[in-house]
Length: 423
RNA sequence: GGAGAGGUGGCCGAGUGGCUUAAGGCGCACGCUUGGAAAGCGUGUUUACCUGAAAGGGUAACCCGGGUUCGAAUCCCGGUCUCUCCGCCA
Image (cartoon, rainbow, N blue to C red; front, top):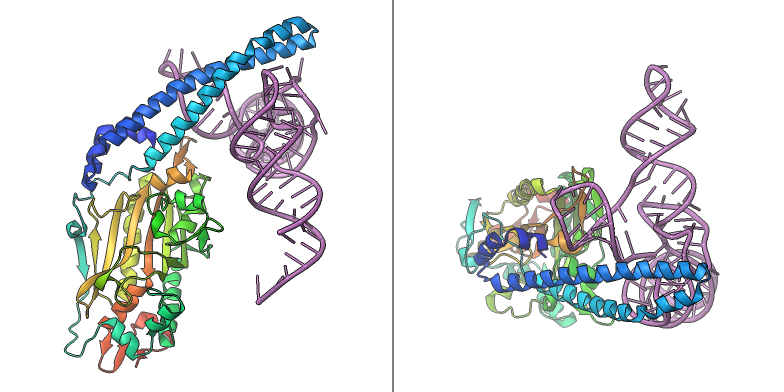
């Protein structure tokens, strides 16, 4: 969530920036600031009363010790009213804080200056495009046909065991998954991201910390018996590793990576979007996460995008980079670059990575700070990116690299698959 | 799942209702001392919020949440986590 300070100091600029999301934030901001004023006045009152109470208690104690029983009793009799007042104000204070907190949670992150205004994905800006779209010729088919032809993925079996959106990988299809995970992890490791294997279920505090709660509650699988959520991305457990921490300046940047399966309910999806590997309830992903000093975070974001581009180049896939417009920007992000690969048989772009700078938005929820040059605690900037999400990469690999002889495995991946063709 | 013990500052650790404004130690920072260092000595060393131009002042926090009391780290209730033993188990 945004900091109160950001609202107080820079209100006009903040509201202007939020219009890029198509949001008129002014009423909500006013409400939050009103609550804040009320809260501060209340706190002043209650603090003064408590100071009075503390002084009186000390006095009573001294009187008792001095043996002046009657005076002490008299003084004590006067305290009841004060106690009631404090209790009432304390309750008021608590509900004001709760109300302010939930209002603050409704406010999305402030888009970075470079974010274009726009309503939907149609308004995203193409930053760059790389690689040649292959000319597949007449016999080319989409990945779901290829997966079937070469016995790589059994969608039917997944439906039987679990339901739609839970594919079963088999044979070289399974090996390809494992190879990609290993390839991505090795590359992240080489780029300085320490590997973690986190839990796949998280508690509500963690889900709140990275912003999945409350705004994406319906998108996560929830084990109600234990009140645990299946992770929709490794971002959640990895970023929460440092929830509540006060870091040293020299600890930064912190660079983490991890492979996890990801679980998403994807309520409301339909049609060609969900065909084959395009949209799944369970999929594999390698995620990279960074904790940065504020002044470095945008350079770090560039570096992360470049890291992902390197992976796509080595997989010999045509891809483009998009700068997300305000309307398509995630709730918690200040700036996001999406990377999309060309799906040659479907003739459409598929999103395979989303790389974002959250600035202090997550850090404020997480209470993750570092000690700055002045020795003062300051919120860190958090960033993350998919590097990469597997299903659509597999879809693009199958489709783009199909030949009359079978599927060609890119050179960089062959040491991991230990086969060069799927035939 | 059952029984028992425990959770105090960056760390160790004392503390069973008011000189706790959390002892003492370790660590760390600065200073004195020294040719330099160690030792020694001295000073300092949490966070959040409120107030103030600042210096400063106030409030809160001893796992979390309630309660008792003029007053709670301390007493009571609920929760949670850790450890030990038992049970179950890949």
